[in-house]
Length: 468
Image 1 (cartoon, rainbow, N blue to C red):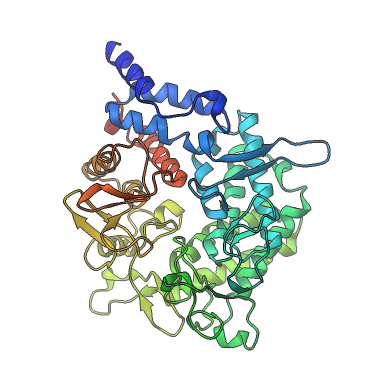
Image 2: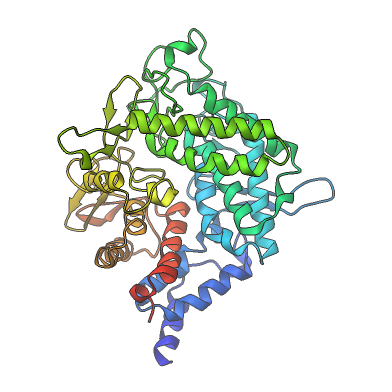
């Protein structure tokens, strides 16, 4: 009892949360999760991290929320953290850990429904954009040369397959948790957004030469950073040949792909598209059938073109990170989700799938050019912030996709030390492998939410690791 009281006081004293009156959104159910779980945790520092990270999106990033009115659905705008814009991918991942509590918490449910509606409105305006302004303010990368043309509502116009799949995932997770069909099935905007997503995916199944002379998407930015723009002509990107998968010109990191068929994003599509098909089939059989068909085509494309065969050792086949449909493959992994490491987290494979296990072995080794090992830890990074920087997001996914207790405990220590060692009780975007005080982004809400999800998952599935 005394230890529990000490932990509670420790959390209260060190909390860096804003007071309730200053929080951007308050949820009684999320507060109850924190107050129930924190006193039960063994490690006071992990408890402190959880109590600050888990609610961070609600505390600081819900920039706008308007409940349902007689004439309008709810509306929610969520920023990514230190950038005052809303990414489709980030906003979805930021709220995912809260969705299971939305069935009973109607205030939280309304906020999440508002986010679905805002994402749908954005996709109808521009399905090829990854990030948006709250209104037509013209903030962001307005000078980029692209098709579709930049508009003032678009903050950044990089096409990433995972962004529109994030909209599907948010809808699917919301429906699974709440069974609230009124949020979107009676919304013409939501249906229009689903149709736009389907059209975009099928258009990008075409080979590069099939799109000549006027492809639906190109992108060029005047920059010194090569991964911030696309190659060929006006920015058509690397060539790809039709193979069933759908092209993604940028990764979840917002970096340009090397080959256009990004395997983790296509795997995410295989998981989420059939769920949306099931959602709509009672209203539009034709739309449901088209969605199922494209999911089957993508799945066949992954099986036929994205698995690298080892003729001498068949049990050592592995997934490529990217491919081009011509038979070329690129192996690496990036900490941003979807990633190859995250395939079980996405629901695409089981943790013990042989092809995944071989892929995982390669990811967590020097066969992955973006796996870094230093005195402060070892983990996956990516090109986005440069060599030698480990991403806590990658460490969290590594823990979520293994059943090895010792490895999970080790990863928790590295994650914890990367925060407290830098004088912070939040997740950073990345930290230098030999010095945790050298980090990027002190305010990154997605990583904070993901850490909260890890702790909640362990409390449910492996309570002996973190609970008294």
